[in-house]
Length: 190
Image 1 (cartoon, rainbow, N blue to C red):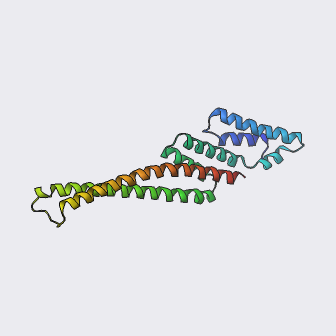
Image 2: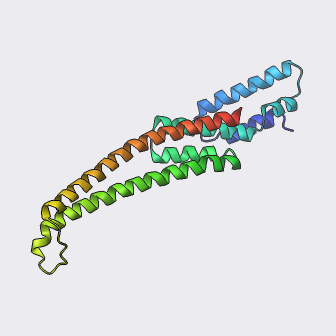
Image 3: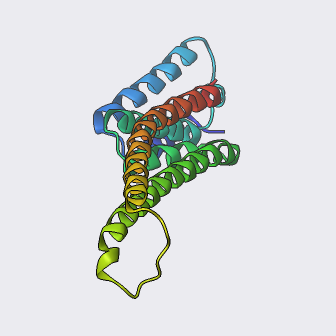
C-alpha cells in the first residue's frame, strides 16, 4: 500500500519525458484527489488504491502524449513511438496493437513494391524495345515494337498510379492507426 508521498513520487518518476508543465498539472490533479479523499475521511492508502497503480497511470499519460505527438507531427518515427508507448500498457496490448500495425506496414510495403516493380518493368520493356536493334545477338521475341512500347508505357503508368494510391492509402492508414491507438487507450483507462 502506497501513501500519498510514495504515490506522487512514483507517478512523477513515471512521467519523465513529458514537458515539465504537463507533469506539474498531472501531479496537481492527483494531489487534489488526495485532498478530496482525505476531506471525506479516507486514508492515504485507500485513496492510492482507488486511483490505481501510479506506474500504469504514468504509462497511460506517456502513451497519450506520444499519440498526440504522432497526430500533430506525422512521421513514421512518431507513429512507431506511439505504437510502442501503447504496447507498454500491457502484454495484451502488445498483441492487440502490434498485430494490426505489422499487418498494415506489411501491406503498404507490398503495395510500394508492386508499384516499383511495375515501373521498372514498364521502363525496361519500353527501352528494351528501343535498344533491341543495337544488339543483334540478343535473344529476340517476336513481338511488334509498338505493342512492346505500348505495354511498357501502360505498365509504367499503372505502377505510378499504384504508387500514388499507396501514398494516399499511407496517409489514410496513418490516421486510422492514430484513431485506433486513441480508442485502445480509452478502453484501457475505463
